[in-house]
Length: 248
Length: 330
Ligand SMILES: Cc1cc2nc3c(=O)[nH]c(=O)nc-3n(C[C@H](O)[C@H](O)[C@H](O)COP(=O)(O)OP(=O)(O)OC[C@H]3O[C@@H](n4cnc5c(N)ncnc54)[C@H](O)[C@@H]3O)c2cc1C
Image (tube, rainbow over the protein chains, first blue to last red):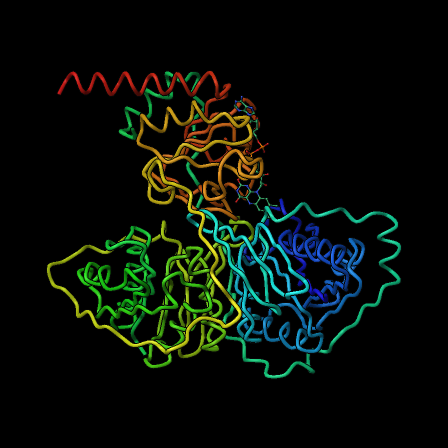
């Protein structure tokens, strides 16, 4: 089974991003890591490979900086890394186009993607990839049961009203939700081995049918501030205040 | 070019607040563009719900049912939406950012080769050439301003950020439309739904939410008693759902539901940015936490530094007494 996991370089998960007075993002002190949902995708890919055999390829679209996160995936245990070289700032359909092109070259059985990147929080790319490839997808997976012989995956999806189970015949795209697994840490031997694993780059100019950018981020703003609250001394005082304000 | 299309996959004959909020969103954009807001309703409840939605100041309701929409997959919904969109000339196709929409809109966007905005909370200046929206980013810590170019665009909106429009006596046309024979993907199959039974108001629609975190240690009894007195919904942090204390659809936050009730009572929740992302727009936030330095107090209108097992029952008792007094007085 050949499994591909997509990876985005995003700010460390608990970072509170700040803006300059002019509304520019302040990035100099920011630490980056593998987008948490993509980390779950890598972990799931490794678990499937370790059970049924095969290969795990970590794939990212981005600038050279993303190599650091691909190295993390290799250190976790992925076999190979592939990066489609683009400066950051592509829109979701452009990223999906680049990923779909790379996926066609690799023709994996399964593509695992994080359901959301925690920077832009668009959650669009994985399903756009599936559509461009005309593959089925399963979103928000909390459980993946793979039948490698039948080339099928039964996926439990976390949806608004509870859970839904769907089945896809491979090849397909699965997006990961938080409760899918607990990603392993890269071990020291893993980090050393990662340096020797193959890492390839596809030039952006090789990507076919790249659309024009149509979604543009034009600026950032702070959230509207909340009014300063007060600390109350007792449950009784709290109850009085909420009743006085007609909140209950 | 000036019209908008709001997509609903109704679960009942009457539209929910979140569905009507999407209609409100679509109408606001259409008004700016000088066009109408039509509503596309898909699935077994389409026809009945279409009749109800027709009263909300829309252009027309387009209703369609189809064997592939009985238990709709994202693939089938995307095919249906793209079919309707390519036959008409909508500037914007919109829905509320439910898991259903998030599971089909990006596919429909790729099919239509159109840009999409996710989780819109504000509408900027819109024209035939460019739509401008604002959405949260970086775990809800900042807002991002977007422009969508091209002739068609898609957007999901955050239901809590938009008002349902007022109903009127005038009723729009309800038209049944035909969909292509095959909508579903040949390699995708719906197996089963495991719905969480609803014992209290729906989390995203409730006026009051009582939410618990790891501090409850899995014992939600005091919170449930408080919720019962207030007619509130129960919510939870990720820690609670990860521990298996409550099902996934109770989770509030970046990865769970986004709520903005009149009153949000957070008990034993530390206030991680991913949790704040789902509740910081609540009108009034109450935090009950043992740790005076817990970040939840930074967004709380009323903070109480206390053990929740001591404070919550006292709160419940005080509300109950107030209710009884009210009852006696009236
Ligand atoms: C990618 C990603 C997405 C995430 N998405 C979400 C999300 O959608 N929603 C979400 O909630 N989290 C999310 N998280 C997790 C988040 O970072 C926190 O880990 C989580 O919110 C913590 O839950 P908690 O506040 O219940 O637990 P803790 O952080 O452990 O806090 C427990 C609190 O309870 C207090 N406490 C303990 N005992 C008592 C007592 N007896 N009385 C009163 N107070 C007490 C403690 O002082 C503490 O403040 C996400 C994380 C990541 C990385």
